Image (cartoon, rainbow, N blue to C red; front, top):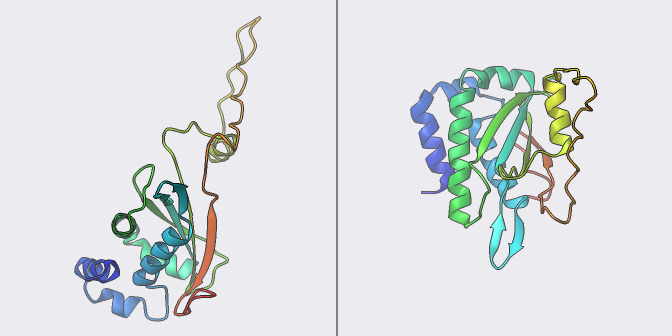
Length: 185
């Protein structure tokens, strides 16, 4: 039995026939699962000596209607999708830096039945880059602490050299419900 079939059986056990009624004409979790495995395969990087690195962070972006329908199961569904991607990565012999995570997000501009999948490699041993710090500051504004008299605030860390840290660029692929990805049959 294939990875996708096992995943579908787990989902059936999770919510029974509700998916058949709820997801008619909308994004179905099995479509997301297939897109995630395709993303892992397409975004892998050959490191040499037979070592292949796959992304370990995946983001599925859904339109308003699809997100609302999947929202009631989003945590459980994200966990099941992460388990399925991990199983696929293990079956293919890929390596990852850290545990696979899947996150579902909403994009009000996406129409019903269309979703996007993006991924990147997150290395927990790598200190955060300036881009990571900038996005964290947007999410939570920094607290400003005035320096003590006669002292200067500490300097920010220097950016890492791109050649010193091999990173897989983040990818973003748009998928449409019921239609194969471009170049795929």
